[in-house]
Length: 453
Figure 1 (tube, rainbow, N blue to C red):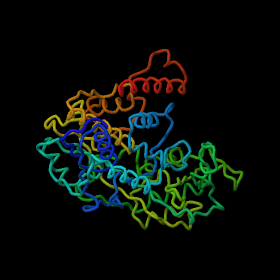
Figure 2: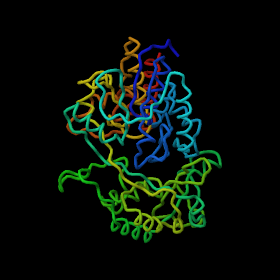
Figure 3: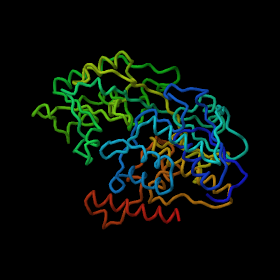
Figure 4: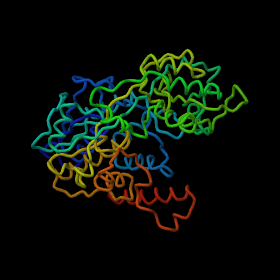
C-alpha cells in the first residue's frame, strides 16, 4: 500500500465493479467510501445486502488464459491483485473449463475483505443525484435506481440505452432423477471426480425436443412494464445476444437451442447407447452441490409456465426449484459519446463510470472496468498519470472499445473477444486457430505486465 492521501474517492454501487474499484484505489493508498443502497433499498434480483452479489449465473466463464479472451481477462485481473478474481479462485467450484463459484460464499468473502480494509468504509444509502463536486465513480450496474438514472440522463443530455437481461432458474439437486440424468462435464473436462460432477445432463429424444419447443413457444410470457419494451411494434426488444431468453432463441428457429445451450456434443449417456438429440445441462451452483442452475435457460416465461415447461425435460419431471427465472431491464450509457479515455464523464470530469453501465457485459468485464476506473481515479488523486492499458491487452481492448472504438450510433453491450484486439502479425495470422489465439494471449500478457510495472 502506498502513502495514504486525505482525499476521498466515493463509489456509487457495491457490485463487482464498485468492489473492485474500491479495492484497487485503497491498495494504492486512497481512502474510499462505497455508497450501496442495498439492503435499505432492495432490487427484485438481489437476495442479500452483500457486496459483489451474483444475481444471474454463478460462472465467470472460461478460465483458459491461452485460448480464450475471457480467460485472458481473468489472468490480467489476477496479475493486477484484483479482489474479484482472487476471491473467485479461492472459492471456485468444479465446472470443467469454467470458473464457477458458490455465489453466497463468494459474496460474503468479498464483503468481509472490503469491510476489513482500513481505507474502505461502506455507507448504506441511495444516491439519487450525480454529485457536482468531489471524486466519484458510478458503478451502479444493470439495476441503476430510477432516480439516479434520471439524473444521469439530465446531466448527459442523452437518453440511457437499455436492453434486457434474463435470469436462469435454479433446481434442487436431490429433485433431479439420476436414473435419467447423469454427471459429466462436456468433453470430460477436469481431471478429478469432483470436476466430473460439476454438470448434470438431461437427454432428450427428437420427440422430447419437439414437444419442448412447442410448449416453450406457446407458454405465457412476462409482460414488460410501461416504457420498458421497444418503442414501436416494428422495433424488436433490445436483448443482449449473450443472455437471450430461451424462448427468444426458439423463435429464431426450432433448431437454434439444439445448436446452442442444448447441443448434445461431447457427452455420453451411460443410461443408453442411443445418442441424445439434445441435452439440457445443469451446472453446480453452490459448494455443497445441493443447487444446480440450468445452463443457458434464461427466461421471461411466467412462473407457472416455467414449472410446467421445465418439468417436460427428462430427469426434471419432479424437479423442485430454489429460484425460477426472470427478466429485468439493464440500463447503460452511450460510453463512446459520453466518456473520455480515462472513463471520465466529459461534461463532469470529476465523475467516472465503471462496470456494466458503461456497456460491457457480465461479471468479469464489469469488474475489469472497475479495476481500471479505481486505478485511474486513485492515480489522479495522487497526482500521477496512468494511461489506459495497451489495446493489445484484454482490458485495453475493452476500454478502447467503450471509449471510442465502437460506433456510437449502434453501440451495444460487448463481451471481450479477440475481434476487439489489434490484429496479430501476418505470420501468426496464417497459423491455425489454437496457435493464433496463443499468439494473442502471449502478446497481451507481455503488454499487460509492462503496463503494470
